[in-house]
Length: 271
Figure 1 (cartoon, rainbow, N blue to C red):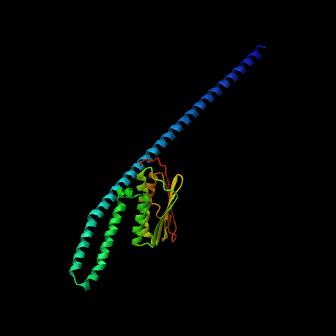
Figure 2: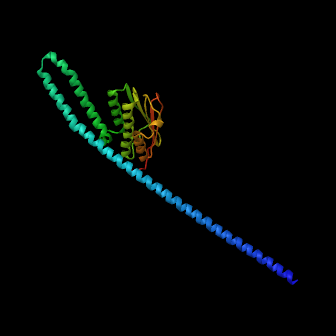
Figure 3: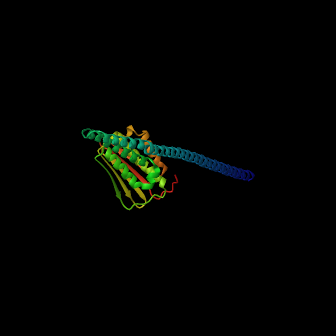
């Protein structure tokens, strides 16, 4: 009877000890899991903070580069308008004076040079306006695009058209207006230099909360993978990222180039 009681007591003690050990193990396991979860959360937070800091740093660099480029373009615009424009005007005036002093049979020979100087002066003045962001803001986004297309049409293109769909919505941040215009200007500049295109078109499609811009040429195109890291494409994408716009470029050899830019009209980004 005594042995049976002792055996029962021993079994109960072992059971309690086992329960105690299981409880301790469960507590330790729970603490380890909690510690691991907290560690992961802190690690993830640090990584997210680092990514955000890196993104903020890159945005600051891009913004600084953009502002520097704008100031450079503005200075070039002033230089073209004030200095080069004046020189061309002076040359045109001198040529006109000389034209009056020659015989009638020589006057016709001056005409081509006079026309070339007049056309050059007109081109310089038009270019100086598109380079100066203050002028772009003053005459407006759509008018600036039209002026740029008209200027390019005179240079080499058969047609260069702007089409507007929907009701125009003003930009809440007018700096974004300049950034988008510079993206389109970069696209058009590339078309002039590389595309061998005959026709250009830009469509501004005003939707309820976005502006969808499509720019297209009918040139030789290219393999997008070959120039994915090209400075022009990187520059356009960096500018688009600054204003939370989605930019995409599609092209194939002999199929021209299509640029699409989806810009949120009610944009809270303060660039």
